[in-house]
Length: 287
Image (cartoon, rainbow, N blue to C red):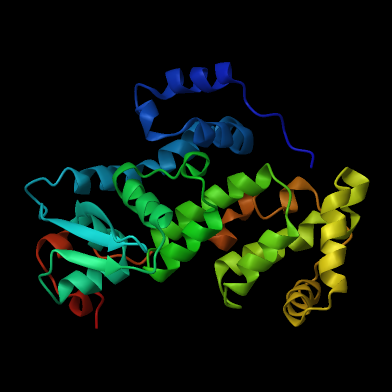
């Protein structure tokens, strides 16, 4: 794939120096700063500023100040029943599942035995830092998106989607990864919409012309297997105007910054005041 050149370490450090008076550099990873510079051009600083409100709210909650409950609860998860502590208010603010669960009982723990260690750990870390670093986590953004969906955390799903934008900008679309994602999503999900957009714009059946013969070969092998699931997926792509042979220009790629809005969830969350004042979930949502 032909991508714009990545910023050098020097340019990233220069960017950090430019924003240090108004944004603490530790709020953003090098990858986030690099993405902003590459995708936003002269608007990179405004883009980073636009992400600050969520980070500020995270900081306010995690500080467990006088305006919020400071109660700590334990998440027990994974096959080995790993334990991880977190502020209850933080979990309730970011997750509809946790909000409803802790609304109706006074338990100091929640058990998620079927959830993976990496997903839960990534979520709790993100709750406190506002950051997802997939390079350090060793987990796919799609897996984090699925976890966010299961716990009803639209904000975390969106952060996972931003990580997926970054990942797909710098990696090829693998056939095996595609089918794994497709099999775990529903027709109306934003993740499936992004997946179909990537298939439609990547020119998967002409990849050898761009130096990726193995990518094209794997796609053709998967298609020739005549799986019903593969046929259904490609039929959806073609019916929506996708061309399996043509690679679209950068501005038409799903990960291009002007297209991000199509794949982001509408955030539905209760206010910090509602959580602090113990307003019932149904009342807060107008039910």
